[in-house]
Amino acid sequence: MEKVKVGIVGSGVISGIYLKNFKTFDLIEVVAISDIDLSRAKARAEEFGVSRVCTVEELLADPEIEIVVNLTIPAAHAEVSIAALEAGKHVYSEKPLAVTMEDGSKILELARQKGLRVGVAPDTVLGGAIQTCRKLIDDGWIGFPIALTAFMMAPGPESWHPNPDFLYDVGGGPMFDMGPYYLSAFVTLLGPISKLTGSATTSFAERTITSEARYGEKIPVRTPTHIAGVLNFANGAVGTMITSFDIKGGANLPHIEIYGSQGSLSLPVPNMFGGTVKLRMARKDSNWQDVPLTHTFTDNNRGIGVLDMAYAIRLGYPHRVNGEIAYHVLEAMHGFHISSHEGRYYIMQSTCDRPEPLPMNLQATHSGLFVRS
Ligand SMILES: NC(=O)c1ccc[n+]([C@@H]2O[C@H](COP(=O)([O-])OP(=O)(O)OC[C@H]3O[C@@H](n4cnc5c(N)ncnc54)[C@H](O)[C@@H]3O)[C@@H](O)[C@H]2O)c1
Image (spheres, rainbow, N blue to C red):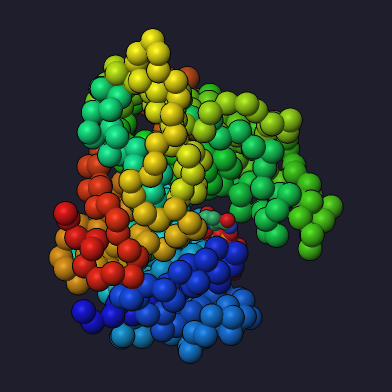
C-alpha cells in the first residue's frame, strides 16, 4: 500500500509522542513539520529526523501531503484545520475540534463539500482499556446500561505544563481540556447524548504557574474551572460527571463506572490507552474482578487515530475517531456551560454513531488490520 504522507502543524509538548509513534507506523511518513514559532519545529525535526521544516503556508502548499495533523493550541484549531481543508488536505486535529460550535460546523461542512476527512483526538478510545469495555458491554456482560459516573477532579495543569495559559482561556478549562476524553469514551461505549444539565463555577480569578521556566508567573482564568453535570443518553442511561481543576486536596472517587442491569464496570482514566478494567456481576457472591484486556494498544499510542484514518483513506472505510463524534462532544461541552448559564436543560441538536470497534489482537504496524473484522 502506498504510504500516506503527513505534515504536522504545531510542534509543542504533544508533538513529541505523535512523532515518536509515527516512526513505527508502516503506512505513515512525516514529510514536513511547521509551527508559528519555527524554532520549535526545527527542534522537533532534529529530534525525530523530519527532513523539511517550513512555514504553515508552505506546508499546506506541498502537493504530496495528504493529511495535515493539527497539533496547535485549541484557539488555533479551526483556523489551521480550515486552511488545510481549503488546500485540499484531510485533517486530523488534536482535541477539541474547535472552540466554538460555529467553527466546528464550518470545518465539517467544508470537509463534506470537498470530500475530505476530518479526524479528531482523543484516540485513547481505540486503546486496550476502552475497547475491552466496549466488547464487554456489546457482549452483554453488564446487561443493559442504566447509569454512569465519571469524575475528573484535579488541582490544575499549571504545576506541569510549561505554557498553561491556553488551559485557562476560553476553549480550555477542565471541560474542554479533559472533557473530550470522557465524553468520547461515553459515546464509544453508550452512544450519543440526548440532553444534559450543568452547573459551572470559576473558583480562582488567576492561577500561579509552578512549572519550571515560568515559575511564579500569574495567569488570568477566563473559563469555568469546576463543572458538574448530568447527562441523558439516547439509549436511556443517565450519567453524572464532574470535571474540575479546583480540587486541591485530591478526591477519592472513581474515574468512570458504568452500571448495568446485570453488573458494573470500572474503567481507568480515559486519557490513557491501558489501565485496569474491573467487572462485578449482580450476584451475592460476586466481587470486583480485574478483566484481562482483550485489545492491544495499552501504551501511549497517541496517533493510532491518524493511522486508522490513513488505512481508511487507502481502503475506503469510515475512520473511527471522526469529526461527527468530535462535533457531538463539542456541543455537549458547550451544553454544560449553556445549561449552567441559562438555568435549563440543554437539548442536544447533533447526534453521531458509535464508531466501529477495533478487532482484537491488532498490531499498529500491520497493514490492513484496521479494516472491519
Ligand atoms: N500537553 C499534553 O499533554 C496534551 C495531551 C493531549 C492533548 N493535547 C492537546 O494538544 C494540543 C497542543 O497542546 P500542547 O500541550 O502541545 O501545546 P503547546 O503550547 O505545547 O504547543 C502548541 C504549539 O502550537 C503552536 N501554534 C499555535 N498557534 C499556531 C498556529 N496558528 N499555527 C502554527 N502553530 C501554532 C505553538 O507555537 C506551539 O508550539 C492542544 O489541543 C491540547 O489540548 C495536549
